[in-house]
Every structure is written in C-alpha cells, then in structure tokens.
Length: 372
Image (cartoon, rainbow, N blue to C red; front, side):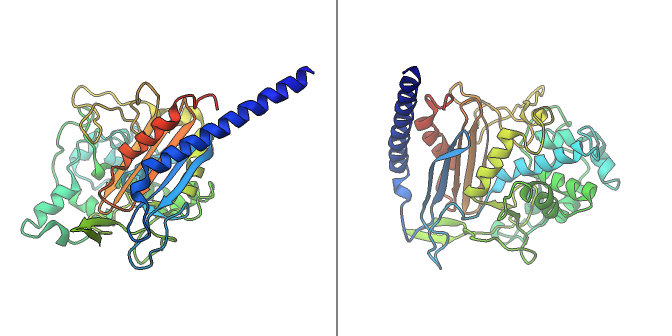
C-alpha cells in the first residue's frame, strides 16, 4: 500500500513538472515571438535542465539565399564564446605536463620582445596581460583605410603585430582588461606546444572525444562549416549579409562555429568533468584578483573572470557564462551551476542582445530548477 502511495506521489510530481515545463516553454516562445520568420535571420535557443533539453527551437533562416530554417544543427560563429574552448585547450596541455600556467610568453616564443618576459600564460587566460589590442594596431597600420576595407588578419599576423611593439598598456597582473590579442596568442601557444594546428588540437582533444562532430575552428579554404548560418545586419527596412570583417579569420579569440546540439554535449562534459577533473577545472572557475581595474560585463557592470569564463552571479544564482559579439553574430551561454540550468542563444543578426535574451529566458526557469 505504501509503495502504491509513493508511486502515485511520484507520478503526480512528474505530471506537475511536465505541466510546468510546457507552461514555461509557451512563455519562452512568446518571449522569442519577434524572431519568427521565414525570410529574416534569427536565432537558435536551447534550455537544458540537468543536461536534458526542456526548450529547443530555431527561429528565422540561415541566410537570404537558401532561406534554410535555423534548427538545432545550424552552426553559428561563436565569436568570444570560443574563448572557453581555447582555455580548455591550454588546460589540457597543462594536464599533459607540456605547459604551465606560470610559463612566460618568451618561453613559448623565444623571439618575442623583452616585454613578453613579464607575461605568463595565466595572465593571457585571465585577461591581465596588458597586451595592446591588435584591432587598434591594425587601424594604425592603415589610418586612411575604412575599417571594413582593412585586409583580413590571421593569427600569425597578430603575433607579428605584437612583436613590433615594445610595451604593454599596463604592467601584467596589475589590472584586468579584456584582450582578444591574448586569446589569439593562446591559440598560437596551443599550436606551438602541441605541434598541431589549433583547429586540429581542438578536434582531436575536445570536439571528437565529445562527439561534437560538426564543430570546427573555421579557416576559409582549409575546412567547411556544415549547416552554416551567415551573419546579418539591419539595412534600412531589410537585411544585409555581414558575415566577415577584417578580424573574422583569427581563431583563438573567436573562430569556432558550433550548434545547439554540439553545445549540449559540451555542457554535459563540463557538468560531468569529462575532459578535466573538478580539481583541474578549478583555476578556470576561480575569479582573478587584481589591484585595480577589475573585470566588467559588456555594459560596464562589475564582473568576475576566470579562464575563458565570466563568473559573477546573477540574482544570487551562481553561474559561469560568456557572450560573443562579431560582425553579424551575437551569442551567449549562461550556466547556472547550482540550479542545473543552462541557456544558450546563438543568433545570426547583429541587432539581438543574446546575453540579455538568455537571462530573460533563464528567469522563466530558475525558480525551483535546482531540485529537478
């Protein structure tokens, strides 16, 4: 009799949870209603609870030539959401004993200028290196050229630009400032230490083991992006394809393309410590401390940062998260670790604030999510 009562109670709870999920899904769809279109770029959205999808939808189209609907297999340029993969690659080399967080930039690149002796791998990971911004250096090289006409740069070109400098913005380790230059160099560090290209290392040590079969570090002419979404920007009352910029060919800071289905596998690997143990992962989720100029969110609010992840909580909910912004794309991943909740928004339109949208969706699911 007691067993029967317990079974009935379990069924009642399951029914309630299912009803709650259905209600939240309807609310989420209402939040995303403006993205519904068969003639405009849009977004792919995934909400996971304890690793299981409770909401997964595509809105809009991949491009304005094929008008292919966006779905869970559509691959978007992740932009700075790439940085978590770059950080993981570095951490795997540390796990291998081939690299150390306190190794100097000049240990890896002996011909780097003397100022690199003060910059460690940890500084690069934490955004505390003080490296000059390669985009600013590109603009100074071609001061009379419109930004969109500046020739596209690749990782080796960034390294050469930085080798021509003689100083940093600030003494390494004394301040925090977001650095795409640092993460491009980290991609090159992975290549130099592993003996493989950055993309090959990601494929062999992260993507293939996790069965992220369509995720790639994209290099034009060397590989292809399956089910590719192209970036777009508003143009008058319509849309213009704005898929590439002078900085779209760099890898370590933003060159990975991925989909909802593959990022669900990535989220699972992080939860289950598939690639690194909890102890090995700890440096990535430990906020960096600096004397002045601490981390900030995109809107200027105070934040916290580890290795490739922002770490500040949201409404007292612990989270690790990142956003990505590049020409034509806006992306975000929000992982509420104590609530077993993850929200991913990938967009191929520049007018969408994917981070704010992800948090708006998270608000629908956060209450009571931890126990499910």
